[in-house]
Length: 335
Image (cartoon, rainbow, N blue to C red; front, side, top):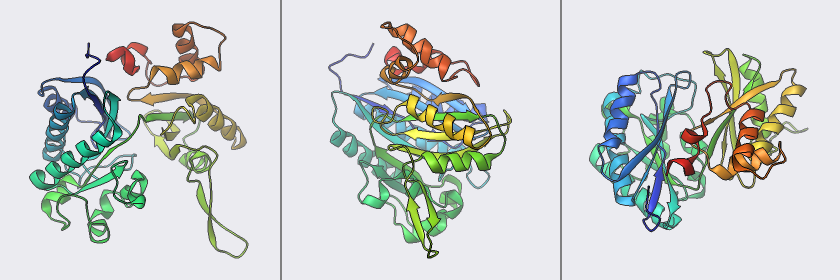
């Protein structure tokens, strides 16, 4: 059990490898080799070719573990050969630091800068800072930094100088790509499953629900941005070939303002308009207990925590692709 008086930081690095079990084990082993760090969750997806790892600990220990993992990923993942459905810019695509207990966001921002400096100088990997650690408004959004993905990195280094690390493309960067490091509040990676393989429908639904919306031409032929339905939501359409379905893949950046329930039900209604239906959903990584209790209370009249969580799991179809086990997925149960 983690002592409540300690400063606790959560780290959720996303690695561009979801198929090679030996590589995934090597990365997680580098985290486990660090003292006073607890590995909470490892979740891989073959279609995305991506692994999301969650661990917690005291700030200095988390920074050490994150550095080790980023270093190991750069050694064993060759981005020049990596392919997958999920957008990415490097072997360690993104590495956020999240305040959990007795630590401020400003402290996490300082920690992100320390980690970014180490990765840039000691590993020679270009580092971009995002979210609360970003040094400019345009770099707060991960989508902006990742635009063009790994394949466009050589050009990006010319247009966008990294916050840390080299700005000149070389063989080392060709292999490792870049890394995005930042500090943010708790984010829920939430995907809604569609009963169709047509990824174009998933793309269209994503454009309609995400806060940034999409660009359309007005009467004069000028492109204007039409905001999406849901605030605090980022979304893209994804095809899951292994399951013969597509997904609206979302990041809920403030689940208290836009809940899992609302995201699910909004996609559900839009899917009907496009001649398909929602079959279930999934949470990638961990989820706060409150997020599921809030969702469950929209489906069931109960005062019992377990019953509300069960109602959320059932009505959101969280076990459609993989069995949802609350004791392994709810962060409070693991701390």
